[in-house]
Each structure stands twice: as structure tokens, then as C-alpha cells.
Length: 148
Image (cartoon, rainbow, N blue to C red; front, side):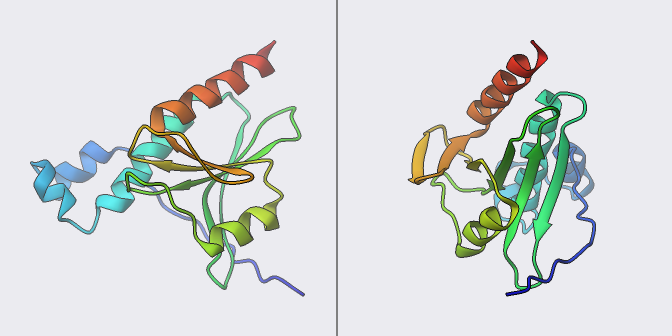
């Protein structure tokens, strides 16, 4: 079976405060009711994750023509490790069939769904739901071990 891959850039606005200001969003209630809230959370998470990565870490977005996608793929320098990270603006972490297809396509070693909560839960044999602070700590551990 041949897979058709789509090559296209994905634009992230990494400064969520700037986004909210430009849209005139001044309260949490305004933000939560606005269609930008999911993309804003995604940009915020990506900005935080990128801030803890070591130089040389390759960062990708993955999407097939049929819609299987992963928000963030991390390939660490000097390691044969690939992480698949899905970002969801929900307290409960959930995965989609497209995520499972995509993580198999890319050969991910570790898979995470970053959610707005703080619980760390197993979603499947190889995928964990995790909060933003915990994923950043996981990444710092990888960076510090790889720097030795």
C-alpha cells in the first residue's frame, strides 16, 4: 500500500500573548469562546517544548493526504529516538485513529498526548497522556543525558 505524503509548511504563532492581544482577547472567557483557543494552546505548548530542546534536535509536523497527523515529531541529535507528540486543549488526553496511523508511519519510539491537565496516564501500550510541565521535564532529562 502506497502512502501519499503532503509536503507543506505549518505556521505556528509561538507567542500566544501577542496572538490574544492582536485579536483583542482580554479575558479567559473571551479566549475560551474564541475559535483560536486550540491553535493558541498548540503554539504555547510548542514554544515551551522548543525552549528545552538541545541544539540540533530536528522538529517536524506530519500529515498524510488522508488526514493522519502528528503535531510535533522530535528527532534527537545522536540518538536513534523519535518522539511523536499530539497536542490537545482538553483536560482529558485522547488520541485519534489518525494519530495511531501516523505514529506507526514515522516509527515513533515514544508517543505523548500533551493536555491541559496535570495527570499522567497511559492511553495505550506506547502512548501516554501528559501535562505540559511533565513533558518539558521528560525532554530536559533526555537533553541532559545526551549532553554527557
